[in-house]
Length: 156
Image (tube, rainbow, N blue to C red; front, side, top):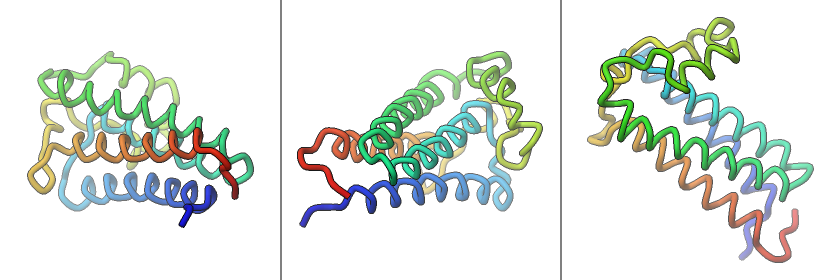
């Protein structure tokens, strides 16, 4: 049975927003404070959700944009895991500058304000580093959106 494009795009949007919700929940409830790379990944998940929702009107275009964003998110998660998590400071990194440029950290501080250094934000969730969970979700979204973009006979 073929998966309809709109169903996959809708699920991608919902899952991406749920990831942001889970991050904010763990921040508020378990005091897992985010670093700049964490909040950048949140922003990318919100952008993926927006692209997926736009894809309800133009499925291949929305899926292609969501795939591109997921690749960026995966790169951010990998950078956080292999480079930033070993750094005592995230000040003036690409993530820090991008988030400051958006102004979202001032408008929505509960969601987009970095509150910890990369080293301090290095925490595990169910035995895995938080950014590994994020990276896994980005990889899943990337695979699904690439499949949707390039499959033959992609219909609603």
